Length: 87
Image (cartoon, rainbow, N blue to C red; front, side, top):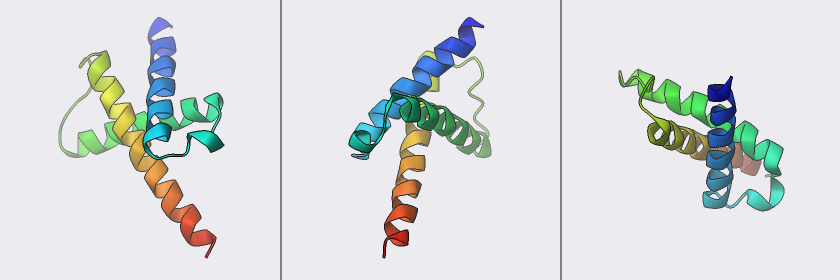
């Protein structure tokens, strides 16, 4: 149970930092930051597994970096799609 809570906290922090990096923080609230961080973690983990890197048991720092990179990729793709839909 505690690990689940830790992942939510790490995901939320990663989502918030990713939204700052991608300059989307003004349009996102804390719930969306958490969701972006969690989905980003899934995306980041999936990408790392494509390169045969297993993040299980790697520690909180690797988990955070994985979530952060995945969240940045997710926000980049969302901005790309949303930018094209406005044209």
